[in-house]
Each structure stands twice: as structure tokens, then as C-alpha cells.
Image (cartoon, rainbow, N blue to C red; front, side, top):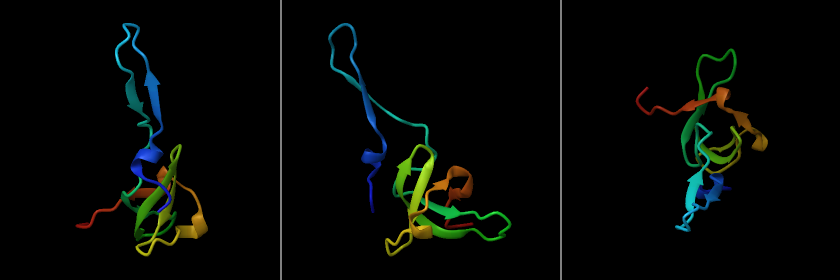
Length: 90
């Protein structure tokens, strides 16, 4: 795997005016996180592919790997619209 959940979330620090400790905030503008299980939904396909594991996140685009850790699609970055959470019961 290329990344961990902590690496995908870039922390920002804000310093209160009263001199207290800095407050750490994490980016939350992505739907999936590293190590999430997802399926790839290809246009025109009835059955989604996967499950795959999110290995890297970059501004709403995702790299996936299979169960053996091999990159899906040659390391292609997939959009949120191409992915859905894996449901092991559905």
C-alpha cells in the first residue's frame, strides 16, 4: 500500500489568539479513505468489479489495489463517481 489514512489527511494548524495550543484540523472533503473497501462501477456494466482497497487519495481521486496489493488499472486514478463502498452482504 502506498499510503496510510494519516498521510492522506493533510493536517492544518490554527493558532488561537489567546496563546493556547494549536488545533489540528484534517481535510474531510473526500468520500473514501485509504484501506476502505470499494467496488469499481464501470459505465454500462451491470456488475461492479471488486472489492478493491483504496491505497492512495488525492483530492477526490483514488488509486486502488487488489487483494494481493497489485494496482488496479495499472495505477490509474479513479473518481468518486466510479466507486461505491463495498457491501459484503449485498
